[in-house]
Image 1 (cartoon, rainbow, N blue to C red):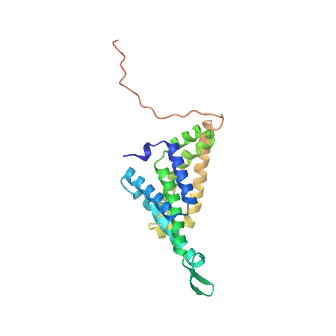
Image 2 (cartoon, rainbow, N blue to C red; image 1 turned 180 degrees about the vertical axis):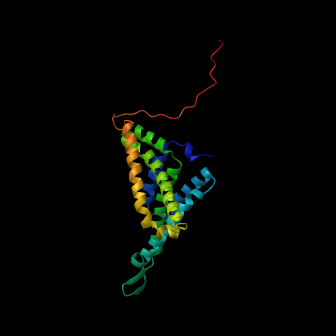
Length: 228
């Protein structure tokens, strides 16, 4: 069976881009449903599980609910079913909601699948091969390393607030305390970005037009040096 992680990063990028474009342009519900099922099938074959899609599925469900409410109130496609003052309900709000949710799901799942099955360094090297200046190509692995650091910083802030007696355990409590957490998080983000910029400058980042790329090498001890 195929594994998405073994595919060429450039091919995966083109496949993801074309999937998103087709999902956006197509107005055929059956075609968009087929695209979405293909993405889910590829993920299941590769990972033998769909747990990676669980967080983004919750977000899509929330967005779909909002789209449904908006189309229910403001949608004007199809035949008029009910009218009461300014409120007018048309028969096409379900179809419009389905099309919108399919497009959102295709874009989100395809981009997320590409991100979790592609190494950031490989994508950066692919962009360099495509003549993208390495100053911009290397932003991808920088961002890939920056977000986990910021997640750990946010957890550290929440733990500090909990130690001071501020309830910050459940999701609702974290959202409630977000105004008190966002300022220290911004301060730490500025500090970390400043340190990263200084480290890049000390390594000569951007000094030359081209730059070599290296992978971690292991020492091969199986070399036969012959008799001494």
